[in-house]
Image 1: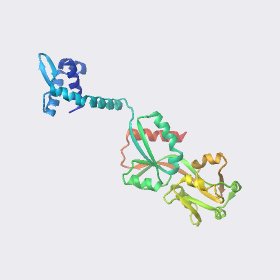
Image 2: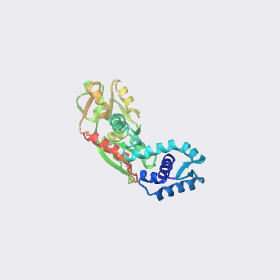
Image 3: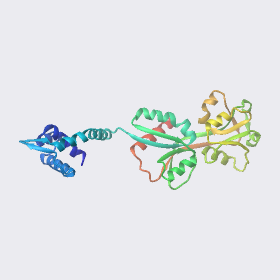
Length: 288
């Protein structure tokens, strides 16, 4: 049973003439007859009675039309959506806490305005979890900041980020060596976080006293209101707090923490039209 066979059936039920239906659909009369025979063979019953030169729905035909016509209209509507190149479907995205909380939300919102028929479901996780999920086939693609090197994973640079040292203490606004800040209460992201990994790699060989670890950026910002607390965090994550002078950047000598932002996906991933439209949209926004 095909959409074409159903289309011919519904046209015949209305026009009662194979020759008229053939003209309407730009088909041969033989093609119309073959389609009807194929449908009736599939169902195992005759759908029309021949009365003179007309084909008229019989009892089976009327029941079949009543049971299927609304579903047929929905199928034709769905087919036409794709023929008109209207994008529809669902994207499931994993993003690092920084990208997922401070970069993607507005981009996704704008994307939804342009493509309202695409549902976007985003979940924030650390970079290690995202990479493992892609390798295990649990998710199609994600966004991370970590410098991973795995044969199964393709990574495409989509932007840049900068990590900075911040505190709520305005008196710390001067240059320090990292060990001059060891008397502060250091709050860091959890193991597996790209932010933590980059910072600790940058000060490798130095035993940093960590007072508190959490997987929540919001929690870090709350804790920074306490005296002597300090952290290394993405500039994206504290942009508003720096502007409002609720937090202050501390310059650390010989510490440069710029990193790339990556789109990551499995090397065997099929790039659907929806995937390509969304990733192109993200790249364009971050390039502005």
